[in-house]
Every structure is written in structure tokens, then in C-alpha cells.
Image 1: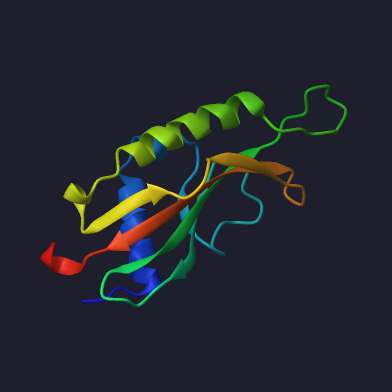
Image 2: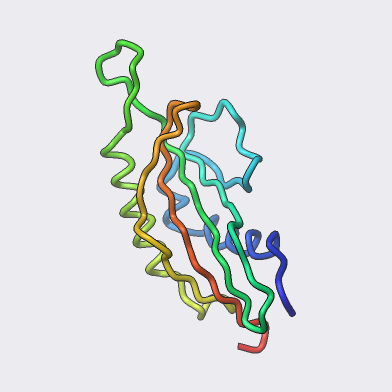
Length: 140
């Protein structure tokens, strides 16, 4: 049976919640649009980016992990917490490498280098992980 976008995200959420990646973070896992605007925790946001309705469904999902910026000089000017974003990028890489079809009927692959970007409105940076998925249904 084919999956909807929300079903794909819910199944990915389960993989993330029980992962070593989630355990290294101070925050929670949210679907897009559900993260509290005032959060200063290291939260994971799950985003469905695109998908096909072919016999073997495929598409893209994005995980953004927010990391509060730091005020190095105590003058109100914040900057990326480079050490922490680097740690999270490495933990994310290890987690992605551990995703296998043996745990579900998906094949997950990285779709680009894991990297960090600024969110200047929040004074935070986020580590972005873009995954390509293929779903083979229940008869794998």
C-alpha cells in the first residue's frame, strides 16, 4: 500500500526518536510548523520535501536540527556555535549511515552533504540533512 507524506514523516519520526542522534540533543522532534517559536533547545524539525506515487515510491525529506547561536564576546552579537554544529553534523552522518532497509521497507540515502545554515530571525543555526527515500511497500 502506498504511503502519504505524513505517514512517511511519522515513520521517519519513529526512527529518529529511538536514535543515538536524538539522544545527543537537548530538544525534541517536531513536524514542520510545530516547533515552539521561542525554543532555545537543539530541536529536530522533519519536513516532507517531495515524493512520487510510482509503484516504488520515492522522494525527499529534510531534517533540520536547530542549534542556538552563542555570544562569544558578551556584547549581544551572536554567531554560530561551530563546535556544536560540527558535533551534530558528525552524529547525523553516523545515524544516516546506520539506516537500513532491514528495519523497515525504506531505503534511505543522503541527498547532499550534511551542512549548517543560519536562521538569523531566531539567532540560531540549523544542521540540514536531506534524505532521499525509496519505499517498497509491505512485500519487501
